[in-house]
Length: 344
Ligand SMILES: *Cc1c(COP(=O)(O)O)cnc(C)c1O
Image (tube, rainbow, N blue to C red; front, side, top):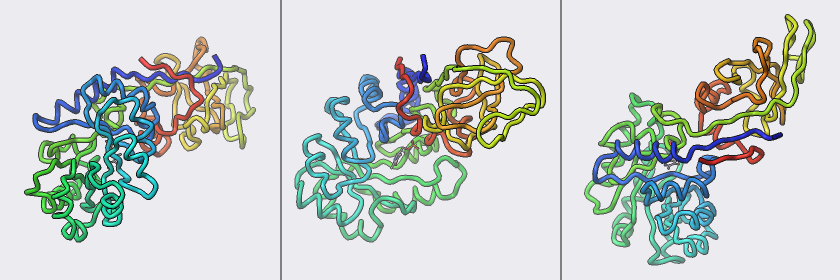
């Protein structure tokens, strides 16, 4: 088979959700963030498995994502982080999506074009990315509260660093803005869920932890990626491999060329720090990662297998991300469409 094989373990995703759900105590619902096509792993596959696991609320980035998700999650709630943008009305209405209103402008748009349609409110508690500012919130909160938001939420900027003082600052801001309201609240994504119960409120909304990434370091791995070896060759001392001649043989070497490259999310920056595995044996990348191909030094192997593993038990998404100077989120969402995908 000419394409890399991407194996996605839906049971592991369900187990990770259950583990995060167990951390959120009674009285706290555990939702699932499934934006960017479930972090690149397919919302159409992950959604139904999450519903079967007991998820009642999903979060997506845009109304378009919500509309695409609707057929896969029955009548579960679907919240939209970007809120109610111009032109969203039909998608919000036809797919029964819940926009998280982010600004006075969005409040006006929602109440004038979709009065009576469910909504939530996203507050800015310090990240300065999305959400209503405290001043606007205070001016609008009685109007918003009487219309009955389904959820009032905010997002933490530094939750993957438990000791960061920003966490307590944002918690205090969120409480100051919302204590005493009669509506459900949510502050924690994966990192916030791990910070402990004071961050949980009525709902947690993990994303990356479901898909096996940090900061949920105890997560069950979800993705495995095996790349077929197209060709192997002997390279003599002083010969070079790949673009720019950046790798040169010191001794007679065996180079395997595998079928995947930066167009498949195996970004060029990972270069020589990334390893591919022949079973348990690590093999270094030799030279530059190309668009569709990676060359690998397999000189030390007694036998070259028909595929090498780049994501698996010995090198997970976070280890691969480290090699590339990025985060697991970016590795997963960059995987692309050329792999043969197998779900189990
Ligand atoms: C992406 C996102 C999440 C999920 O974050 P993870 O770190 O993947 O758990 C939750 N809330 C908001 C507002 C987000 O943008």
